[in-house]
Length: 210
Ligand SMILES: [Zn+2]
Image (cartoon, rainbow, N blue to C red; front, side):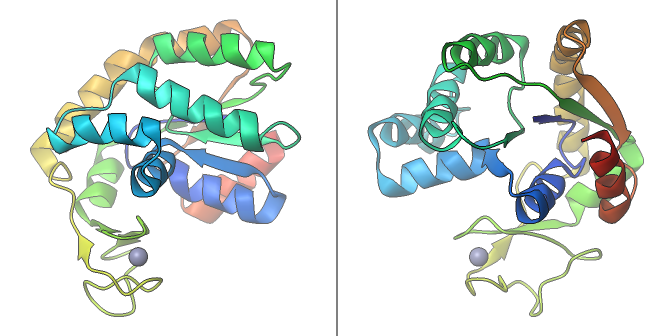
């Protein structure tokens, strides 16, 4: 399954819920990237060289990392790709690689989300520096302000979680995603859900589709 949607659509939250309740394997590019960098794998080192310069990690590196994960962990288990693929190029690469493994993406959920909701969620979002856990100052505050419940590390606000940058990120997303949506529509696997709803409501709808 692929969860597709703009930043702030709630994909990550749903992926975690699906993993906990239905035992899906949750593959998030952010987590996998962090893990590879932390463990100092070959590919992690390559990725880090871009991150240190403040550049985006190139497509091919992200793809290689995701495929490694799929090959090792997802062979006998249903899996969710969260935040990936983001471009039609990545989608084509993933499809070709999955075909070799006799695997298939059979459901793509598009989280259609309004600008107002995305702005509210992202400007209030706080992340843990250490473990990457997500919080929201209104919806999901940590027990102690500025401190991660899980690992007690410092929480921070992403530099790009400000209104102007969020709007730009959404434009980029929309530009990339139009093609991607058509691609999956063409394969007959695309379903749309409102990302504006509460997490439990979205989960309910998602369960019905699954
Ligand atoms: Zn933490």
